[in-house]
Image (tube, rainbow, N blue to C red):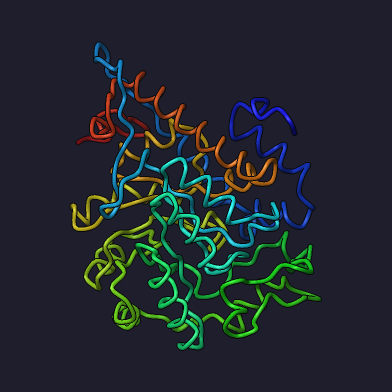
Length: 370
């Protein structure tokens, strides 16, 4: 594609991306678990909530800036941790990191990245970027410790532990495609240490096989204490859908919570992330910052999430669509589209700054009171 202005929203990017990706790669990125009920519900949750805009407010200047864990952001957005980005574009996570850094948004790098955490950190360092490292706890504690120590040494500002994947959800499109990494791609953060990689699979997906062989399903709350002993990085817990789990995470030292169902890729039938958000925000009562992901495709979706109490949102698949279509330029355009849409949504809702967004803007099946 030569004319970057052709796609005017995230949905159009998804259609274009399908033309640039193999069937296996597109299915891996886009699929959910089992019947994909939660995948669909993540999107539909935003449609169920309606806006009640304020009128006659001076919105001639809008301020979209915020901060997460003390780190400034030009808008309340981070790029979610997503594996295997070189499936979409040869520059993979490096292109994504450059787009995020130049736009002033955060990036969470996946353990399962196809570019090393040191390479990605170097991109962020040039722009003083907000970068976190996402962690899966492996059965080998030495491997997990090595990853944490490397992330700290490389300058990542937080450790984001994914807790909703003690085993991998069954994604039937991956099973049908017997998903594995193509020749030439590898787990850049893992092979440096152990020689591990996603195996070729004959019956299941290679990713399913890797999870069952290498990742620990025995992780409990007590492991958070050990994890925090490995570095001074603040701990973010990703994959929480219950208020009591959120409270417990904070009791065990978490500084931020990501309300998430893993993009509908783990437990099918789980509650939509947005539907879990307000209860968790209320239960934490300011003890930790709360973020949310899953189903965000418009600036109005970001506005609704912030009105429900999120400090920021994470966005996943659309970043991959931009990356697949035209690399770093596509990712930058995705971020720009969301920024412009959020600015317009704020103006039309009577909000001149992020701090003006509150629950009085929302109605759905019930009025959400302040």
